[in-house]
Length: 256
Image (tube, rainbow, N blue to C red; front, side, top):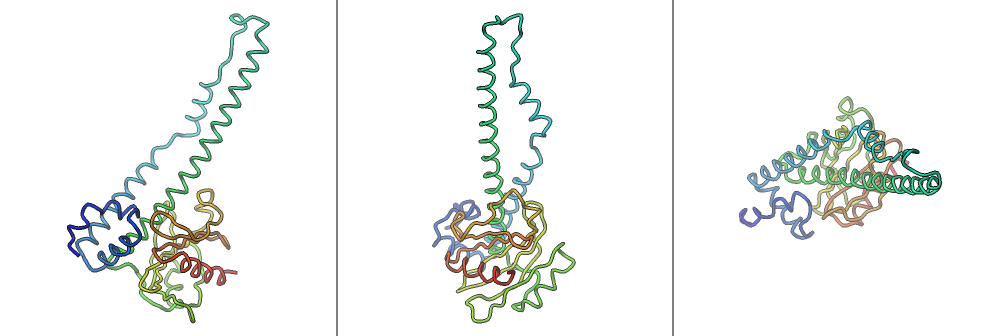
């Protein structure tokens, strides 16, 4: 495939918004083309840098409190007749309710946006892995080799499932960061599709993700996530939803 064919689609690929068949074709291409792999990695890194820079500037609780205080109105007795007090009180109550409802909507919206940011960052990590010439730091299909490698590199331990009699194979793993939290990034393969399994401490991502999301689409990838035993698992890849679910169940069985 000529690299020029993809030059206008790099950003769409990095965002995981290409059709599924094009994503698979592009994934295969970047694994064999050093130029496109380097370009994809640089764009992922730039996207994450912009995303992290945006987190540095957010309103403080004191600033929000000041804004809320400025919204409140306190009518003066000298300018309002005694007969208007019930109406003013009713208006104040109504205004307060609107503020509370508005804040609730904003809070829910922010929680959703925060979760979307984390999911998007996980997609970026997966795409970067696909585009990397060296996607793993510990190369092994033996779980008894991969698991000990993480000791001392991340602040928690985890178990890996037995893959015997399954369609999956373990390629290896690496240390990674999601929303500034350190964790494990494991890479599996099924029928030439690579799947990322991310494991983080749940407390570091608490309040940012839903308790559990079954296998489903996240951009152009299938993804499943759940919390168990104090750890947060995210399984993501362009393999079918059934494969994502099957690998997730292997991890669930291992950790029960």
